Image 1 (spheres, rainbow, N blue to C red):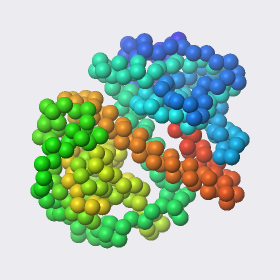
Image 2: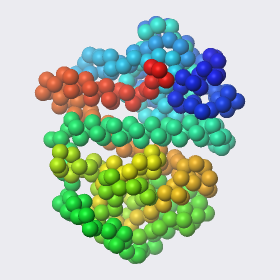
Image 3: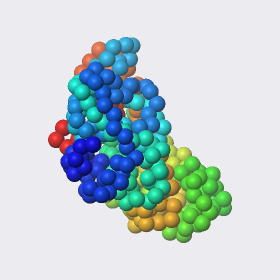
Length: 356
């Protein structure tokens, strides 16, 4: 393997880890070599491994709808391929082909999870950096969808637009006491299913549960991120202003998490959230959220998995939008627009190293 210190300096995923911590992580990795012209990964194949390039160069290639291929990027030492595969099963969004003899470190998802189960600080830090990368990709891709797909984005409901436009609306004044036995529902929610009873009770104790009526504003784009929300029942509509209109990005039903991007990135909300139908929400305050994401609370790793699953689900929805927009751009003979969108889709497969 290359010098460990040099690897830590080149790979953003390993930033700030000392040599001992990195050596511990790399015990779960194995070294692979590829000749020039060999495929490191193939678009459409199952993804269960991340590759960290030690040396060599490679091209990122995307298959075009209807046939043919296009090069959408180049990678060099320190680049990471398929880091999302460490979190969950998926498929490769692009092929990567070695331009010259190349060596990589390979880490499988199961090996990464075994390291996580040991509660090692370095592995938890790597997991958090992957989470942060997912947030950044989601922000960028949602922005691209709004910029390129103005005719296809769904307009938010009239009630949502009205609440967002009202400067005197106080979201907290619309919160009502929960009107049913919500606790019995929590183990059924996808984001909380892995929690045991004691972990759920602890989470409830440090959170707030309330009902909100249809049309109520939960938070608005640009406002400070003070909490994230688990939808216990009902649904939220997530929207964003673009070209003078409030456009819907998605709808979150029971078990989904909302408001996590701002908390993870320590930034204001980039979207607005309104209540699509009468809903019950579990609000997790910022301080509590940070305890869970820094592994300082019981069930922290389970909570981090729930956050990552939410981000991956949101990215999957965004990818579907991008795929549709690529097809529309090609039908309309907008080659440059199609190439830019194809590049955005394929770039999810990899992250360049420092200096690339």
